Length: 293
Image 1 (cartoon, rainbow, N blue to C red):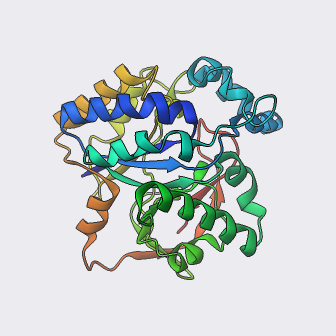
Image 2: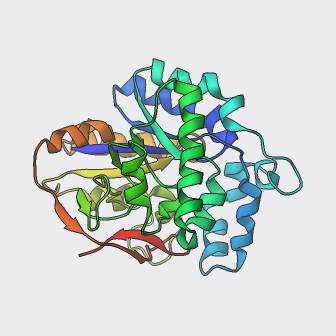
């Protein structure tokens, strides 16, 4: 089993990348979960990460300006950030109408990604609540799944997710579904590298990210895989690469599903209980929330 999780970070990704991915996945008959950012697009404020180790290297490798657009990189600084939930409401609803699962990625993607790790419980709940309320205005129902922006958390997030009514989450990087120690909703972690973490890496023996990923999935784990893609990338310049990857997984015999499908397959199974720890992932700058032992 392989669940596809689509992170939608920006207005441009929602407007342009999401419809392309919906068309591709619909043509191939493949389900996926689209996680939306539903507040202001403040992508330009992410440039404050310039001094973070590995940030500039990733910018060069993945052609950030070409993939996100210069205008997007100015939102929240020299240009006002468009309200994604208001301007792209119909685009988001069209995803649900096309039969895909939807959920919450963030209210303000950059604010969450850069602020949640050191935030208070009050700040954390307020920011997540704002996302839930905006999502409710768009879809007329609360979100059931949350996938934290940038895989960034603090210790209070799992409990707040449960209190706000989420059923499950995909906030972390890891190896298999687990229950966070201390409570909270079950986690379905991303188990594979993303394409942008593999493209342009000098330390990989195979420069083709598709072949690298297919080598990693040749022996499927019992609990399956979760692969995260981004509307701005796989719905844009990486579209052909992504389609080739999907074809490779089909040849390997994978059954595609969305996060909800993977969660339902767990049934009444008792999940491992694990800490959520902070660590690094090759090809991505900064630290992330990881499944611990």
